[in-house]
Image (cartoon, rainbow, N blue to C red; front, side, top):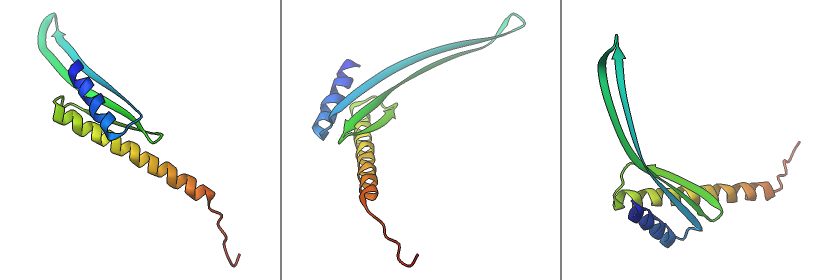
Length: 107
């Protein structure tokens, strides 16, 4: 898993991010239901996935995926980068709107 995390960090760095972190997790859950001292149901759940957090242009982006191959992680990193860029644009527009003086005629 460490090689996949390093792959994401290297790939995101090439996109021009300031910061990137990757969290790859595996979860294992086992449940046994018992009724009247008799086991009724046995459930095993195995899940795995990754979360990618990116800082670019002063804005954060995040994306998670359950696709833990290089292509899936690459796509998730690209989405996180696009989210951070969208947040940057929104921040820029908000600052621009705040700097504009509005004049309403006829009031």
